[in-house]
Length: 95
Image (cartoon, rainbow, N blue to C red; front, side, top):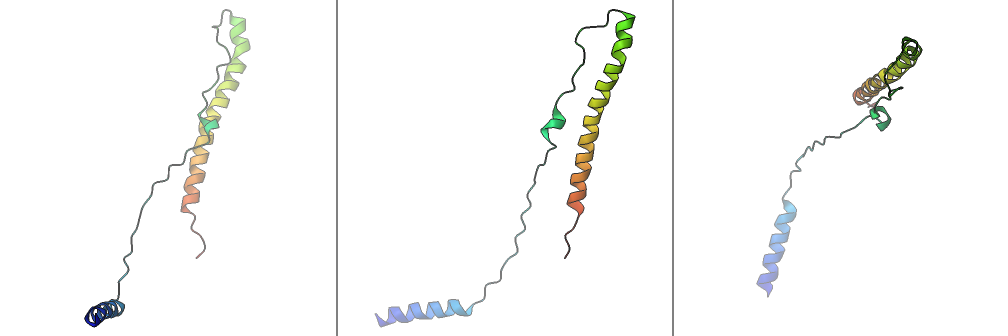
């Protein structure tokens, strides 16, 4: 019995004397970030039926132009959003 206690005591004392070297583990994670869903909505067509007369075409031109500009602004907003996110990634906190 005394031998068993002596063996256990000697094992526990040698474990206390050894040093464990910590290892640094680096883990990389990919975070997917997407633009707001409002930027993904399809562009609306202002008219479904084709133009019949020249007067209709003349009247519809400003409406089509406005719809085109609105649709083009969506891609500009996505581009601005991406640029903003990229700029945020490169900002380093004060150390």
